[in-house]
Amino acid sequence: QKEVEQDPGPLSVPEGAIVSLNCTYSNSAFQYFMWYRQYSRKGPELLMYTYSSGNKEDGRFTAQVDKSSKYISLFIRDSQPSDSATYLCATDQTGANNLFFGTGTRLTVIP
Amino acid sequence: ETGVTQSPTHLIKTRGQQVTLRCSSQSGHNTVSWYQQALGQGPQFIFQYYREEENGRGNFPPRFSGLQFPNYSSELNVNALELDDSALYLCASSGRKSPSYNEQFFGPGTRLTVL
Image (cartoon, rainbow over all chains, first blue to last red):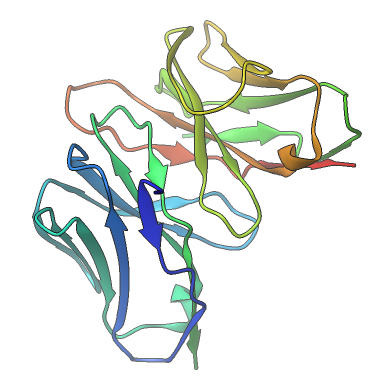
């Protein structure tokens, strides 16, 4: 079983839609949870990070972690064509940046 | 402030050859991590260097080795290249200013093709 599972998509939505991206993880020791965005031919860039359970909001983005079900979510409100990218979830046990990544979900927002 | 840079951008090698990839960390960062990202997959952690010492290693064989230099730049060396080593190799740097989470910044990657 992989440490982090993520539906690879692809996912296509119309501009303005609410996008929901999800991952599950297997190791209950994971404490740090991140969402990265990766544009084509670029390295990943950190969107959100959460420590332990709970919600975190930053503009149009909301990250949720449910440790009881080992479930990680990212919500994008009022999606824009510029949000079209691959979204990667990642987890870390100690905060030392030895990250376990999901496969990535490719998102396309259609104008 | 200069971000994480990697060289070369692209590289083509043949099976059995050796390759060295280079990474310059972001200014002020003393920790460098290397990841392998196969096509259509998420990055996989190879190893991390902190103050010139290996500080954690993923599930990669010993033919993957690295170095970190006093200026915190780093090299990834891969010996006896195999076809499955074809991937995007990502370098990421972070600081160690506090015991809490330190954001990791990724470079653009080196695309390695093994023929």
